[in-house]
Length: 204
Image (tube, rainbow, N blue to C red; front, side, top):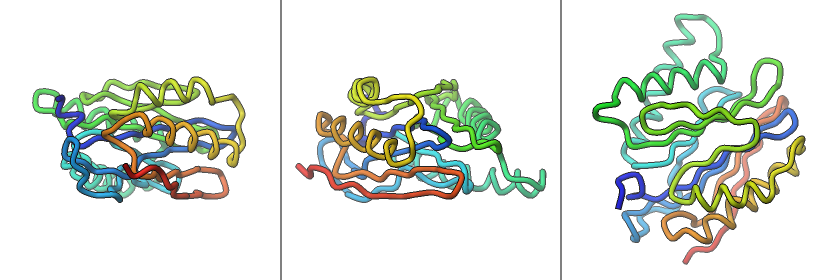
């Protein structure tokens, strides 16, 4: 088993019309053993940027703290809030710095630009950025998520439609992956604010 699959995870970000969604499952496992049913894989970076990390749980926790520190330093130095694309480059550089002894995580970033345009991207463990204008996925359920998102996603979804789409994609994908699941958390970023909802899923 790959070290990337050791704890299990599923993260997806999806674009709508002037809104963006990011969702993750709740399970923390040790291979097939479930350890926790409420592990935070998605964290806010600013009011308009969220990052989800799929991969090794210890590195997920370490990087959430390091990203918070780097973003605070940026805010003090630049005297402005970091933008999603700038943050994605920062994350990419931090991962590439450690390319010979990498953090075992696959980041998924979702945010809204100043003009309200949605932004999503994902990366591999050494920071190679994959920009997208529809959806990005990561984790042990990534193949399942790709299939569900390809089937369900449509352009210009409103916040409620986007929530329904990303929720159905997440729940159906993790039902077919024994390493992730046990419910999910969905964050919808809109110009008016962030809507966070928890989903109940199968717990077997």
